[in-house]
Image (tube, rainbow, N blue to C red; front, side, top):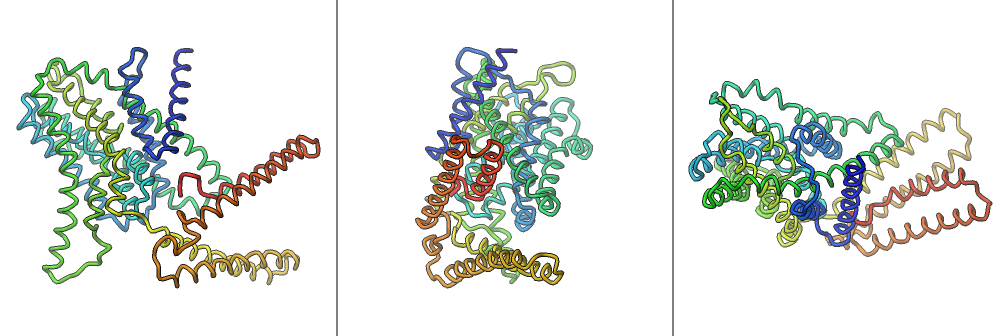
Length: 497
């Protein structure tokens, strides 16, 4: 028991240290944690063996639910055509093309086993992809597509995997089992849909205090679960490598080439075809389409490199049975595990480290001025709603006049400030971030954030001096600290701007 506790505490320390390093260097934490797991996996000592049923039951659902809570149901609905194309069409295409490739070029691995491998390789990891995409400052549309794909493709992949494994182990045709087997893996989709619905509706029925507490809890759970997951991915190198001794080098090379080739090449081809063909058809039919309905070439390039795989793929492939019908060994199982593991590591580390530079080279970034304009318009509208409600309260004559006057003066001040910002954002011809001094990334914005944090720090120090001098009880100090904490929480984190 003590050994387990020591191991867990050491893992938490590694997660915290590598997250700090990621924040300081700009490198993706997922890649750093995977590399750390790889290093630990080849060293002597205890390792944690991946239990696929534990991962699929207790780890993946909360991660998907949390990602869904922070996603936008309306934005995903607006980009539903692309999301469905990636989460269903590309998943099925990846499974089938991988199966055909393995059947043709890898001796001993049949079509069904190859499709099972492709199904395990097909789902992207929304956690890793979003972490990289957020750090790269992608436009909201691309973030939404990555979110939607990662949330919805697991159900398709696991359904395809189950059907393919059934065919590989019993020889049963695919179609006979498709409908029934789909019901056994719909839990993943249910979690994603529940998270999207609750995230969309929760602002209507949850209090501010509940949201703050829930957000803090989910942030901590995400931080620890994601850290352990990526460490776990790296640690699986030893059991995966052990099973390769029975295969010739040529077979291993062929299997790896098929797996990596399909994962890295099919995605950009699929995106290019599914974006260009509908546009060409509509043009031939004389029905034009808005430019924002389709992805640009640069956006396709960025999304092509956003297909990061993760622990879902490993957990899925580890569910392959050891034996098939009649008690015979599942031929090629160890080879399929290795191919999946290599694809996960290559995408997590390779794509994770190069994604942000590629996005910068292609010039695909969110426009902070546009985001600032929308937020300021929403703030101005909310202040006007508050003033209207204040007029209703004043008509009831239930609140003292001085109190109403103070509230109205506060709201009027905010309204004037927002109108000034809107005038500057709407009339400025320069669309660059410098045209919006209140936008992230500008010098004025950074200076304002620094000043507000400095003021809050000074207030905290003064409260501590009062407490240390015996003028302020600790109970009162905690109340005042909580007020400052809430004020500080309205500021963006240091690494988000």
